[in-house]
Amino acid sequence: MKKLKYLILLFLVGFVAACNFTEEIHISNNGSGKLAINFDGNELMEMMSSLDSLKQDEAIDSTIVFKALLKEKSDSISKLPLEEQEKLRKLEPFSLHMVMKPEEQVMKFELFSEFNDISEVKDAFNSFQNASALSPPPGSNTSQAPPMGSSNPATEVNYNFTGNKFSRTTRIIDQELFEKSIDSMASAEMFLSSSKYTFKYHFPRRIKNVNVEGATFSMDGKTMIYEVSFLDMMKTPEKMDLQIELED
Image (cartoon, rainbow, N blue to C red; front, side, top):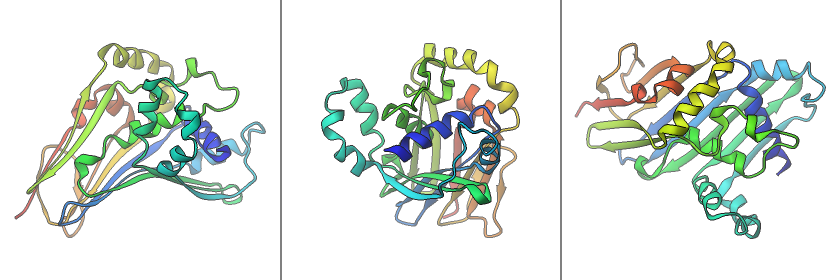
């Protein structure tokens, strides 16, 4: 739990510095695969090394399996309001791998879930935000946490892969909360202006068509890479809807 608290603190701090995320999906012929959110925090680690309150001396290479963690903490969780319990249950399919090497100024983490059908997996980015409900960082002011750190997401992402067609669609599930999050994000825009969010999707067959401009492809045509502004993704999430058609 100590490592989890520290990770959440890093995540919240990460939004006051440039941050780059990669949403990566591998899909096999039978529709099974892996979805992951990857974060490279080397730049953040370098910044933290100069701050005594956040300096980390211990190297960490560990994996948190949320299904096991939720089972271990089931007694405590059962005492929470039903709404909070439901948020935590959404983490159950995910595991979190964290690597920190202070001497080398390396910090990387990967939140991932393996699936039999990608429709089983919901928005990994929002799922990670729900992790803050497990235990807010000591001394943190949750009322002033960045909007993207909220455990109540205003949007929902769904994935589907049927036949030759893959889709990633976003819908706003709480318009009022969404508008508030956009307003409160204004103070962080200067820090987040250079941040990127990259979609990297691997398919079992060559890609025939995509609905967005600016995407690039691997030499074998089976991988699509699409990079967008992190701020654009947060402000206009519906524009990040992806429709991908594969060859027969």
